[in-house]
Length: 316
Image 1 (tube, rainbow, N blue to C red):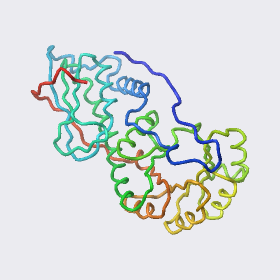
Image 2 (cartoon, rainbow, N blue to C red):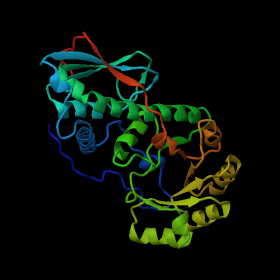
Image 3 (cartoon, helix red, strand yellow):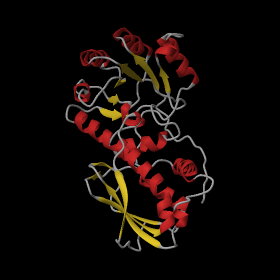
Image 4 (cartoon, rainbow, N blue to C red):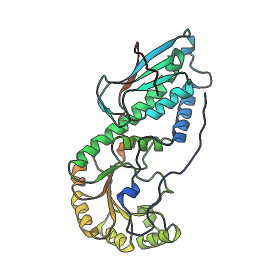
C-alpha cells in the first residue's frame, strides 16, 4: 500500500478594496477535492478498517479475479469518485475501475455507477471503505441538490455549506457540496475574517473591521449580525459581507433594503430548512448557508455487487 499525506492552503484571497467583493471571488469550482486530501483520507480510513493484521476473511479466499458493479440503491446525486478510486489504488493498483457516471450527475435506483475488476481479495478488502466515501459524499451532494433546486425556484441566492463538517473530511465534503450544485463557505479560520457574536462581546464592529483592514488588507471581512442595528454598524464600518444570523424572512428583507447601494454581500444563516429556503431566497440575499448539508445529510445507499460484466481497456 502507498500511503502518503501532505497539507496545503488553497483558498483564494478576496479583493483588497473594501466593499468591492463579488460572489465570484468567494466561489470555488470543480468537483475534485485536493489530491493530497484524498490520499490522506483514504490512508486514514484504510488504516482504521484494515487494521494491523489485514483483512483476515478475504485472505482465506483462493486467488482469483473478480468483476463487480457499484450500484445506486436509491435516487440521488453522485460525489466521491476520487476517494473511491484512491481506496482501491492504495489497497491494490491492479484493481481497475471504469465509471459510468460523473460526480455531480443524478443517479436512479438500480443504476450501475461503475464496474470494478481485479484480484478478488483486494476488491473485497477495499469495498466497504470505498462505499463509505461514496455513500457519505453522495448523500451530501444529494441534500445540496434539494436545497439548491428549492432556492433557485424563488431567487438568485446561492446555497452554501458551513464549517460544520466532519473533522478531517472538510475538503472532501466541500467538494461534494459543489457536486450537488452548491457553493463553499470559507475552508478555515485563516481564509477570511468573520466577526461573530463572541468576538463582538470583546470589541466593537468598527474596531474589528478597521483592525482587520490594517492587518490583512487582502482578506474579506464578514460581520455576523443578529439585529438590524448591527447591520447599520457593519455597513458604516465598510464590511465586505454580512452574515444575517437566525433572522426571520421579513427581517432579512429589511436588511436587504438597508444594504442597497453599499456593495456589501448578504448571507442568511441559521435555522434554514428545506421548507423555508425558498422564502429566504426570495428576499434578495446573495447566499444562504446551511449547516445540515454537511453535518446531517443522510448517506446515499450505494452497494457493490459481484457480476460478470466486462471492463474495457480504457478503464480509469
